[in-house]
Length: 128
Image (cartoon, rainbow, N blue to C red; front, side, top):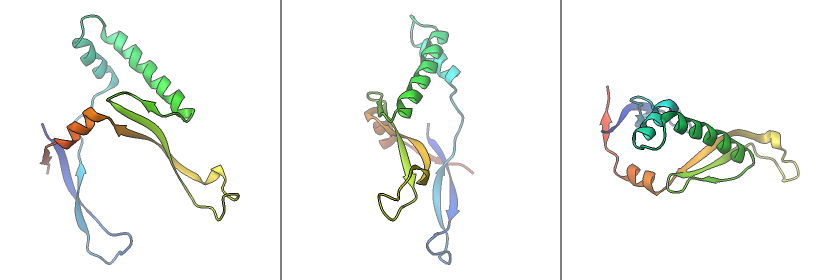
């Protein structure tokens, strides 16, 4: 299989007069839901049902949320790491900075070794 992509034009925000350049943009080719994931995991095991796996994955989501909400980094071994990342508006001094200047909090995911190896060997296919 290959990762599908389209090519899209983007202008230069720093120079609106510059000609647009064309860039690749990944195009999804389906999705895997939590329910489908749990069934697939259960198929590889003779000891747990898809219902058991789904229950664990639902709890995992709740626990991940709780620990990220506490500001913790959550490491899932070779899978990767989750952490809250922030951007903010600037303040003239440290004393003038206040939390309302924080914008767009996100959950950052950094892939572990297995996913990094997968990324290094991706194949690509342009779609029309």
